[in-house]
Length: 248
Image (cartoon, rainbow, N blue to C red):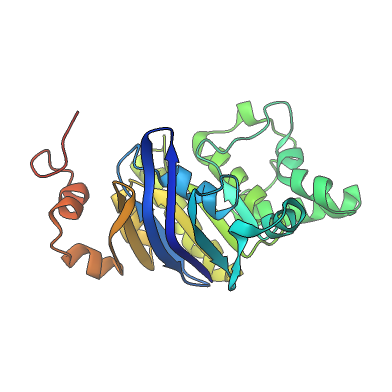
């Protein structure tokens, strides 16, 4: 569904992406792993067009979105949903207002129809009867679920997850993983996640790619990644302090 070809991006003298090549398969969960500061967030911002590359191509259904005009990009953007790292809920809005925000901004649905859709998406992520709560009244896991409900409110073709388990305990992280699997299977959506949570990666991924020093250095199924002898990959997976990755 998405093909990234020779993607390059630098900020002043710092090279962040140095020729990234990757295929994102439709209807699958692709997980991009890598250390903090390796450019994973910059990479996904390129996919949804928030950042333009210095060179390279990103094909969505064979259309190069890098060369689109602003109006063309706006229509493409509606095909994406995103769960931000901290859920990024508006503190002054209720849960229902947060989840329904994209519908109010981009559709002509009535308030009644929006609320009906909001309740359905909240039910999809396992939350019922919380529409009138404020974000401050939610646990970290509940905020993630509300953020996911908002990400899927417009039935996007692709949902991007930015560190979906950051700040969560192992049990809640596992719960988020199950939620990702359940919603992806039910909605048949393409999911892209960036994370350094190896347990989550092994739990949900159909395909895994490791970004290191601006390039994809290893990719494959979970089993292929586990058995890949690349020393950088294996040190990252095991969390060892000994190996080519330097601890600074």
